[in-house]
Image (tube, rainbow, N blue to C red; front, side, top):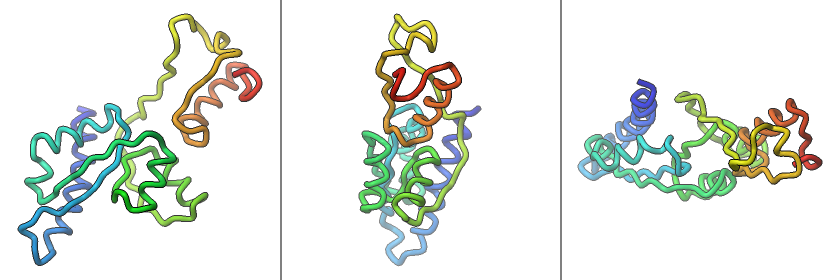
Length: 161
């Protein structure tokens, strides 16, 4: 089951962190770990792991924070507001290339749930001409994907939408 394997991937990363935490002298205490994710279905395994006590059983006190957008997530990771960011790979690349930050990337999971969600009166890409297209941040992978798809359908960024 894809959802179960995604949960196992996330849980595996966090359990590895708990294993490292267990080597501390005060291993009887839960190791505090702050994770940040987007408020979408991809974060459900984290919510479930917290609610069911799975992380606590493995020595982790997981605090889940939800992000407003990619930029605030990247800034939060750099500033130390949390230790783990659950995001698309483009955010890590941006941190490396733009912010010159060192990051560790663990990839895998799912197909990205890439969908165009539109108003009911939009029946084709052409119907987007003259409309506003909203993305979480204009310099992230999903926005770049959207721009490419729109260009392939004859719409130019800044001119047609």
